[in-house]
Each structure stands twice: as structure tokens, then as C-alpha cells.
Length: 180
Length: 409
Image 1: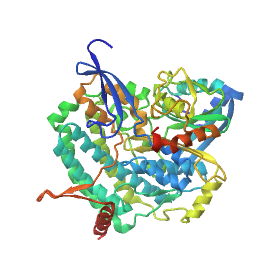
Image 2: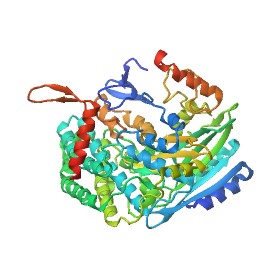
Image 3: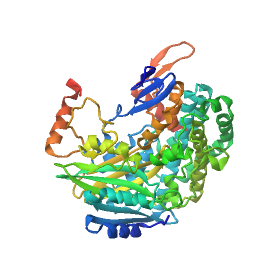
Image 4: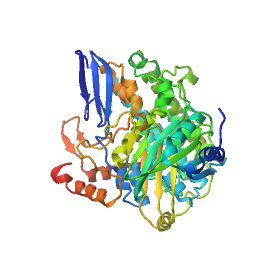
């Protein structure tokens, strides 16, 4: 297994996916302890069309890729998901954190599942579905996970648009009187 | 479902579980054939709350995510915030204090788990022994921070309190106490025939499964996965200490991924934490312990910040991470994702439970060390008279202040 550092990985992904990579940056952290050893973290924003291929390429680099978590934010008309992955773990100070961001429009909130590549992504994909209202195509188990079963369909707590905010506020205001 | 299988729910609140969660087992005779884990019973929407508060408020909220390993959330949140803001330089002394606190927490958390595991096996004497031993580290945490839980130590750009030289002898006394008692505890856990009988070969997670499901922490290491955030990506003061992932096979045991291997890993990690604390105390650099003492200035730095950060910390239960996004001219955290260790171990739980006897469910469930809530200390019974008195919040406060004073002497 060839081990890349942040810059090399950024160049590798850019070369392979060109226009489909919207942005790329490498964060370097070197103020660690007295030894000041350095580690890297790669941040990229990719098009939805190539998202799964990017993940597949990363898995190609290190078959035992570790899925830390996917975070999600409402950024207006779109939802941004960021998949935080760890490559090259297993040796001292070799791990490279790769953060793959992808934006999906709210009126077509579909994203392919990566559970077939990394089964450990299931929990976080289920969570993104219920909290942000994204639809993960091909997810092996699409049931709710953390949200109470009796919260009605169509309530997404992490959405920040007016409609969802009003819905959530109403739900919370009445929670003591009626229960959820 | 065949004629002979039954569905057995355990939870949401059940004596076999120390926290509210829900399992739905399909059992064939006494053997579990299918498991459905349904968490969320205790979901408090902390991220939702945090996104409506400013960064320093969220910092203290983060500590309240967990009642046991509260500091790990503060640690990861602080690091993620610092990376998002990009204007903080953490002094080296602060990095060392952060590491000492994190390792003290691992000590008390692993000892607490050891007690819980003993209890789940019906070995309550060992529960009391483990928790008695644990009191010493709790006292040290109280001496350093003033609290047994929720230490409020971390802060963007450093820590909130120094560890002054006069407190160091007490911490060293604790290290000595543990070094002397460690072997007794280890022998009791590892050589007891009943414990062996109940844990060897029970709740097995294979190495392949552990890697596939992105399992973290001692649960993964018990299966032979050579992974530890402090080693894979040494952050802050961990760059200076030679932490290696603790695998049972390196110490003459099997990387079997069963409950017994989990006990081995956690016990050896207690010894490892003692070494780290001892190193940190001896090599702690001098200098400031916080970059900026003025709270309003810190808030302004955070308000001006625009960016995102992601940080990982090896908690007692495994790697845990926080993602923080800050927006310019906005007080509140724009986006926040908390990923606790147990979150990544849910799938491992499922694989560990299949094929188990129903009687072993509670120890297997406890074997991943799920995050268990706070202890309560409410009713006091006088053993002589049998008289029960209820303690109020004011009584607790008085007792707590008295004890802090006593310890300071």
C-alpha cells in the first residue's frame, strides 16, 4: 500500500475527477506537543455525480478505510453532507483524515448509499435521513434510528428553513400539553 | 419466523441495561438469532440545542452529553472549534494538562466499567472493589477541578485551570496507589475461573467485522484491530508520548474479540494511562495555560471566525469526533455534529449478540461499554436505626463543599 500525504491525495483526486471537484484544501496541524509532529486533513467538495466514485477511489487506496461519521448542514437551498473518513490508520502518525463534502438540492435530496463499500456507514446514513430529510438511495435499512417513532413524518430537526423551523417550534411548544 | 422462535423485547428501561435503549431479540430456544437495536430513547436533541447557543455555551453543553466521559466531548469540541476558527494557539502546558485530564478520565471510566462488568456477571464483591479503587482518581479529579464529574477544564486556546505544583504530589500518590493495587485487580479479573467461564468465547466480534463496521476503541482492539486515535494521528501532547494500541495478543492473551479480551484491553489501558500521566507530570512544560484570559475577547475571536473543523479524540470507549462550523458575525455554532464512540459500535453490538444465550445478553451488551448515565445519591439510610432521610440539593452542595475543603488540606 502506497501511503500518500495530504497534498499527494489532493492532487490524486483532482487529477482523476478534474472539474467535478469544486474545492480542495489541505489543513496541516503541526503545533502538537513539544515534538511538533504534523498531520494532515484533506477537505474537498465534490459533485454528487462523482461522489460515490470518489469514495470508491479512497477505498481503493486503503481497503480498510474507516468511516468516522457524516455530518450534515442546511445551507439554504441545499443540504451539505460531509463524510469524514480515515485512511492509513494502523501505524504511528500515518492516518490521513479525508472530508468529502457533497451538496444536494432540497427539492431533489437524493444521495447514493455507501454501505456497499463501507458497511459501517449505515448508522450515520440513517441518522442523516431522519434529521435532514435526505434520501439515501439503496440504503439497506431505511427505518428511523434516533428520532422518536411518534414524531410525524416530514419533520426534520436540523433543517433551518422557515417551514421546518415553524413545524419544530410548534411541536415543541405543544409537547407538554399533548405529548409528541 | 419459525414456529419455535419468539420475539423478546429488552428495554427501553430494563434491569439488565444501565441506560435506556431498546433491543428486540428473536430467540430460538435460549439462543438469540436476530437482534434489532433501537436507540434514541434518550435522545435529547443536544446538537439541535447547541446550534441555538453561542460557542462557549455549547462548550459547556457538550460536557453534559455524557455523565461518565464528559470531558472527551469537551476535548473534541474544543479542538474542532480551534481548528474551525484558526486563530488559536494552544500553549504546550495547556496541551499537557488536557492530556492529563483525558487520561484521568480514562482511568476512572475503565474502573467504572470493570465494576459494571463484574456486576453484570453477578460478582458484586468485585464491583465494590473496583469502585472503591476508583474513588482515588475521583478525588484527584475533584482536587484538580473541584468536581467529580463535569470538570469544565477545556477552553478555546487552552484550559480553564492550571495544575499548580502543590497539587502534583497528591496526583503522584494516586499513581503509586494504583501501581500497588493494579496487580490485585488484574489477577482477580483475569484469573478468576467464574469470570473466565462467563466471558471467554462469549459475544465474539471478528476482526473482519470490526473493521467493516468501523468499530472503535477497546471493542475493536479486543478483536485485534490495531487502532487508537492517540497513535494513528497523535494530536496535541500525545505527539510526545509513545502510545501504542493495546492488543491482548501483545500481552499473552488472544485477540478473540470476546468479552474476556475486552476486559484484558481495558485493564491494560489502565496501566497505560498511569504511565502517560506519570510522564506528563514529570515533563510538563512551564508557561501560560491559556492563550487569552478575557472571555469577551475569546467570544469576539469566535464571532469573527469563519470556517469548519473536525477533531477526534480517543475516549475511554473509543475514537469520538466533533464537527463544528462557524460563520462570520454569528454568535451561535452554525453546524455541529457529535459522534460518540457508542454510535459507531451499534453495529458491532448487533454482531456480538447474535448466537448468544439470552442469559448472556446483559454482559455482552455491557462489553462494548455503552455510555451509562449518572449515579444517583439521594436516599440515605441510617444502618442502626433504619431511618431514611432524603437529601436535598442544598445538602449535597454543603457536603460537596465540605469534602472539597477537606481534600485541599
